[in-house]
Length: 184
Image 1 (cartoon, rainbow, N blue to C red):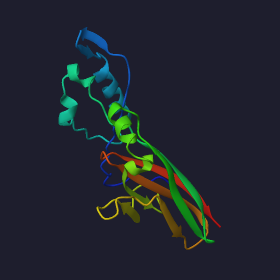
Image 2: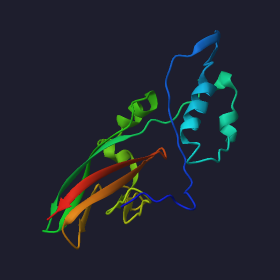
Image 3: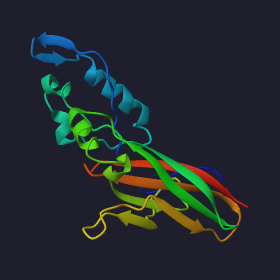
């Protein structure tokens, strides 16, 4: 299928995390003199396709503070796939890990299974690479504080399907993972 430019392009939000050594301006303050050049060069690459640029309030933070801004690390999890009936697929979250910090080490010592740090799980059974369609959810509630780590679905026909699993942890950070499955 030929590429067709969209008349009304969707809103694009890009978040980048760059790591590099900062120059020490004072003993408590470090800066990067090339930060603005890097951002401008990146914008030059996309400005033809996305000509509108709005500098957000957080992007106007003083250079002296920029080096100290931290983004939450993304969780890691494993999803196993298996056959369910003849035209179905079974998914199971088998492992869930957060980047270790002092706080998490203390919390992890109090839970038996690291998957207990999952607050919400949802699945898009036929993800097309654009909009996520939440089709099967599991979340913790007071009467049942455990998320279901498994999901099953029977497809109407043979083919390859891309499944997107979205997990939200107890700290409010989400992580996505796509798996491709074949149904015979």
